[in-house]
Length: 310
Image (cartoon, rainbow, N blue to C red; front, side):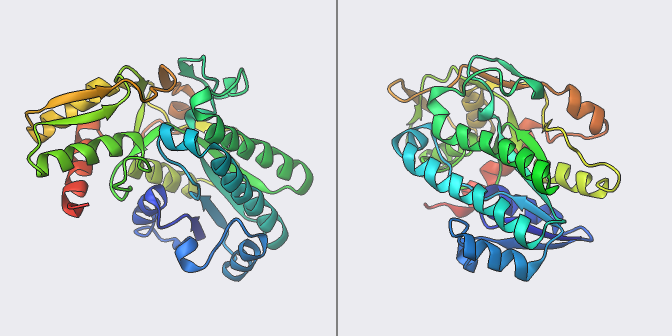
């Protein structure tokens, strides 16, 4: 199959491309650096029509820390809504037989829940700290349903926990949470510091997904696409979470870094708990094995050490 990865040079997109390029599929990464401006409908239509993919993996988004999505809330909403509206419109007009595959951050779930089951996604409002980004992720679900309802355009939606791994930003305001932590600690150790600052109080409990594991789930899904439309959203889930404090301990232990941690309680923690129900996932992917968190952290540390200084 011909697979187009939108946002293919970003963090998640690059990990997806890195895994899928070793398959029998033709994989094409595309983003702004290639001239594709997804905020512009004509640009989206031009590139989708020219490539004619059978599968569109939508990893394109403007996202960052809780601090960024709050400070730039209007920009986050505007940019991301334009992207997803144009992707669906361009796909419907230019390649209506294609499948759109969406990784959807678990911030779409109601802020009051502490365990996320797929059928509870509309059971309340998103947490205020992620209002701007979480709301646009919910609109992906709306667009998926509406474009299928009217045009038969098919989507496969995966709810994903906080991802981590290589290829993310070195800017802690733009990087995903665990990557931002690792990046900060690598930098502190390399500079010879004996302490470093962590945003928040460290009490938030999160589930973590190695980005290449998500790519492996995608590859498994594509291999089984015929005869299985994957019409219901699926949690890519392990039903297990750790607090930020526990993560920091894991990182500094792996790095053998003796240091003092300064917790910046002025920065937001976000929703108290985000752990995802894995019942549906285990039924669909019973043999899938996730990367051990310690191993994934070690690989991510190695990546940030390789790109230092930053």
